[in-house]
Image (cartoon, rainbow, N blue to C red; front, side, top):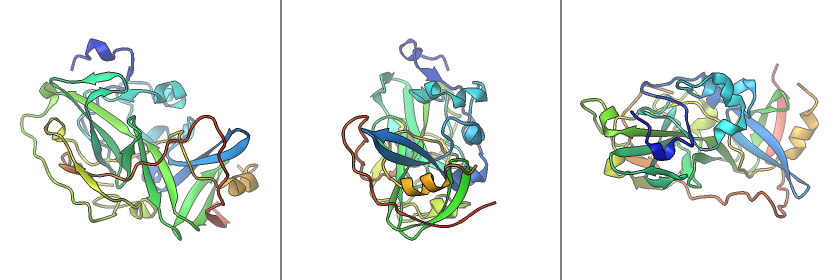
Length: 282
């Protein structure tokens, strides 16, 4: 498709017209990032990488060089166009319409956001979030090592979604629209991630007619800087150590209650660590 003039100042990663299948590890290991708010250490938990070489294979790159995934610059406002399929292990979580992040999605242009299965689109950009229940065993990458931990409390995790934008002329000649139920918490039709399969979700909402196209269920996940849950004690102790056939776009999608977005300034109390470390993996 020809990119409309009014969105050329943003970053189109290129076409996504087939189902991208990332490594299964993209959905099996949580990553962490530590930052401070008014001197108080905070930790965000997310799927995928944190602008490093570990997760370059977790996202489709379209026609852009894979190395650009290492730069925060290319994780601002981005999309895939023409984008017709979510990656394997992901699902459509909402539609993009009107003025999305300053991009006009109107007339013959349509858009949708892909999130990891059972995660929700929130905050109006490309962020996804979900909740892992207490007593869940998780694998976590922290400061170059991987630890296996048990959650003592529910934990919110985040991911960068995959925005798809397309023109009516980009669609296949015939598309079918299937409906996905909301009663199951499974991460996908064939779950390869014990961690993700227990992701909590609730609620549902329908997609507008413009978003009902043959976009498939999909896969990887990425990182998101806005966050919430603190487990600084684990990170500090280990700091020195060093899914699946594509399906058409759902007519309905899972949606969670929207969490508050973490401000870049202002006080924030440190939460009690929700983890119990069991052992390190080789």
